[in-house]
Every structure is written in C-alpha cells, then in structure tokens.
Length: 193
Image (cartoon, rainbow, N blue to C red):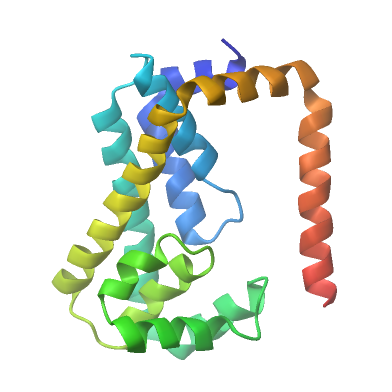
C-alpha cells in the first residue's frame, strides 16, 4: 500500500472532513479523490464507510453554514468577493442566481455537484433570507448525496482505482509536479483572461 492510502486508513474521518471542508469553503483543492479513495478502502474493509460518509457530510455542511451566515449578514459583498476570486467571474453570480430562481432550495442539492456553484449557493441562500432549518435540511441532503455518490463510486471502481494509484506511485513525484504545473497554468490563464 502506498503512503496516501495508508495515511487515509490511519486518519480517515479527519482527512475526509478536512478535505471536504476545505473544498466547500473555497480552497481550490478537490475532495473527490479523497472520497473515491475512501470508497475503495471501504470496499477492501480498511475503512468504515459510514464514518467516512458522516465526516464528508459534516465537513460540507459546516463549510456551507459559514458561507450561509456570511451571506445572511454581508449579502452581496460576500458574493462579489467570491466572484472576484472565482475562475469564471463574468457569469458566476448570474449563473448561481438563475439556478436559485429556477429551482429554489432543491437547486442547493444539485449545486453540490457543480464546481463553483457549491461555494456560491450557500451565501446566496443566506442573502435571500432562507430560514436556517430549511437551509440545513436541503444542504444536508446535498452534502450527504455528494459524499455518498463519490464514496459509492470508489467502492464500485475500487479495483481500477488501485491500478491508478499503483501507476501514479510508480511515476512518483514527477506526476505530481506535472499535474500541479498544469493546474497552475490553467489558473494563471484564467487570471490573465
């Protein structure tokens, strides 16, 4: 077993909570690879899937509550800040407001699966005056489905994920440097644009 899965086995729930919380709070680090790895490890019996799902759901819900309350108390200032730092600033608020107008609170559930919208939807709900219990219900459902879907995919494709992890381990730090470089180029391009 490589170092990353071993680390995840030892600190599973904490790592998943931190990864999902960081992603949902707006740090551009994806939590999906961690969720997939947790699913693969759960399928091998090396991680408790219920604990992994609970940690992912709680991390997402807490991050969204932070944005919800910021949206409630700071409104458009928070939305403008998020749009300025997003990779698609021109359409970010408009797209999120359209989703919220068209689908209402069930749109919060779907926004979890769309990068960028998942961070903008909670402050928009807070700014719109949605009640806290109603927000917690819909966002909790979305958080549960988000974590559950990717953990389930990790379980279903655990053998393929093991092959990918082994291949990346053989490539070593060079593969990580290439991926980080490509991500930095993309972010730099979007910033310049």
